[in-house]
View 1 (cartoon, helix red, strand yellow):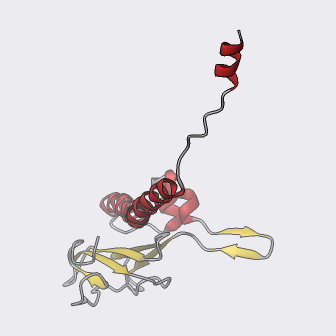
View 2 (view 1 turned 180 degrees about the horizontal axis):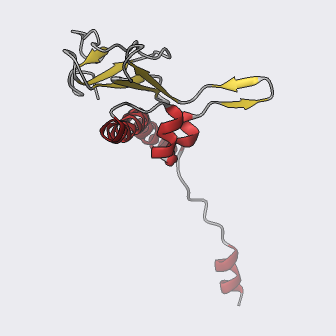
Length: 180
């Protein structure tokens, strides 16, 4: 009986040494140093793609409006075409503070013609401003893409946008040229 008691009460002082613990912490630190930048890069990319997708979807709705009515839709008409974007296309007021719409819609034409171009822009959560413009008539007819890192200002829209020669900034005739 006393032998069993001694076996049960005998304490084993084995454990991890300080060196072993420090090696484990070092390995965890190295893994974190690799994973965090990768995670942040994926997060930025996802935020940019969300803004790009919003603009492409709304441009599809604008194309439907132009096909049906021979003019582009403003924000209110666009909400009727694509109700899923009601919150993003509507400014909100809380107390004395007005928050602008997340997506800006600009249509343009002349005093005698209906809107012949539409410009949609949105600031991604990553801080990059994206824009897409569709021109239906004239020498500048076509679709143009815009991106400007670290910008909160909406792009300047015109019936014939000024194209940039710098990749990833300003208006471009291709999505890839704009960094989309």
